[in-house]
Image (cartoon, helix red, strand yellow):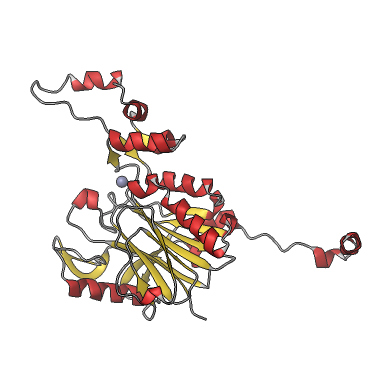
Length: 322
Ligand SMILES: [Zn+2]
């Protein structure tokens, strides 16, 4: 052992010289891009787009065949207001546009849980969508898809073991650390190391628009020591259930007979999931977010909070067949 080490130490510097380090931080911080393909606008995370062995994409609103509020939209989720044929046509158009037209698509019956499902060649053929909120695989040719309209879609790629995951994280899934649990399953089943993982947090409702009540504040306070950083407004008062004297001057301005509104706070689901992934060991420079708020940008996305009757976006990822 010693002799091997010493002989290596004597090797010429040209041989032992380290490869130049990739500029990972620059990649993670690069602006996400809207790309035109197949008559659609496709949103991509630069850090995933540079990985040639995978396909990924976040869908946007314009360009489909569904009709919503007088406009044509790319609704990718089955809904009462839309026909099944339109959704299937939209999905076909979207999958073709991202180069996944021939892939097997796996979706979920999403229940705001913390349940990840491993997908392999055998269970991908099942007609029944599994119940849960995350999918992960190491099998090429299978497109993992989650549907959202405000909740945060998260895509993961393990660059060493070549595994991928798609996660649906609303406040309930975030509270239950679904992103970390999915990563944990990838570690357990594939030997994934968090250091090798690239994470992309897609368009979801932003801190600017996501108002929640004391129930949510209290639950986050109970689960995360640093939860306060993800909230704007009277978080401490709501989380502890105390009365905040700051509300009083405002409350007394209301006409008599009207019950005071319950105080609200704003939650930043992106910040929360970023912290959860970082806590699980994913380097911060590997985690990027789209920067889009679905409720602010209903021209580009769907927002359940803002519109109620609305469509669904899809975030999808797959390993290419070689
Ligand atoms: Zn917003």
